[in-house]
Length: 135
Image (tube, rainbow, N blue to C red; front, top):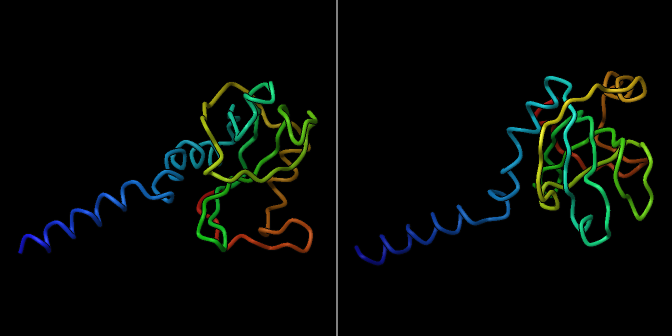
């Protein structure tokens, strides 16, 4: 009986500390932003160590990849990408998002067009999104 209780406790602890749980920390905020066309400020991956300003992103979708991880798709208007700072369509892995804050802002015309067009989960011929969570 004690072994079963310990085993069950370990399963619960492992589930609570799994990467999937950590990934979902920002899911509610980013889904709300996607549904209401809000702009977010995110600190991503190694941006701080590269001296980058936080990224500004118009959130279009949150999706689950074929690998089971969560992704955000959107239009980035500020922030480093391989050392460059320019507006473009981007995909962000949840496990690399360090912080998220909804800010005042309006989607620009290009971003509105891309969101209205929809996204099939592909970058070129590389299709890696299994299903949309919200948009």
